[in-house]
Image 1 (spheres, rainbow over the protein chains, first blue to last red):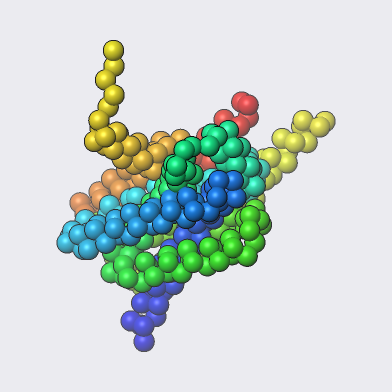
Image 2 (image 1 turned 135 degrees about the horizontal axis):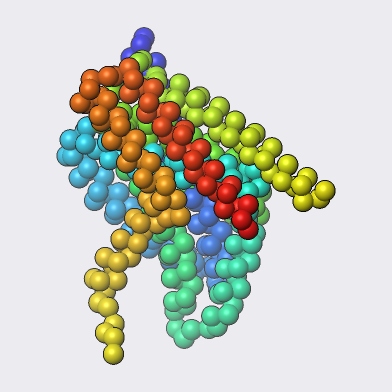
Length: 255
Length: 80
């Protein structure tokens, strides 16, 4: 009974972190691909996307199984440290955006900016290299962050297959949404997603940093849910405090 | 006259730049904080065998690091 509960706690947090992170990064990549497709034609956009996905798949196939040979404590310490940093960065950014201290990620603005850059570039003879490179870079760089999370979370939890499958489902779902909504990606609640991912990444980062340093967590994997709850409450408190700071600053400006 | 860097040099530089942006970027304080968290937990857990203390200190330090980084962002925004 206890084993089943602890396994499902770890799995829930793993699936949630990989799925939400993949969705956020995929929305950013899709914005660029849609801009390339609408402006320069779909052939180069799809070619760039396809090649980038192949390279990313090769990276997972190459590095994923190799990481299994690294001693688990060492792997979890490195992965924990990386996730701790990455998670805190995401949380910080999303808290600042939620309180208005940082501009929100505007997919419409990024779309318009990419379209303008592509129009300025002019035509190229033969294959559209500019469109290909733009689509490739967009998918590869955003995808690389997903790959790092899939490999690190998957190998440390001994569930690389599950992590890769969840990421693939997220990629397909966002792509389908992209087809349906065409370019209205600004409707995606990206900051809320990013905040949830930040909480989950810091949770895993804390847990595995501890595991890597032989900390014995009470309740084993179940502690992941406790840590996630603590970080969610702390995030909410930070947002409340900073909103108050922004409000008082705005009142001082208008006074 | 400067020579054009080789594809390998560009690849290595690009790889290094990706990891720098990924881990340090514009929040070096969080990178340093993670090292401090790891060091403190290692001292408590591995060297001191204070497991119960390490369980509390690890998440508390993470929250304090986030608070310090947010405070820095607020200070920066006040100056603008």
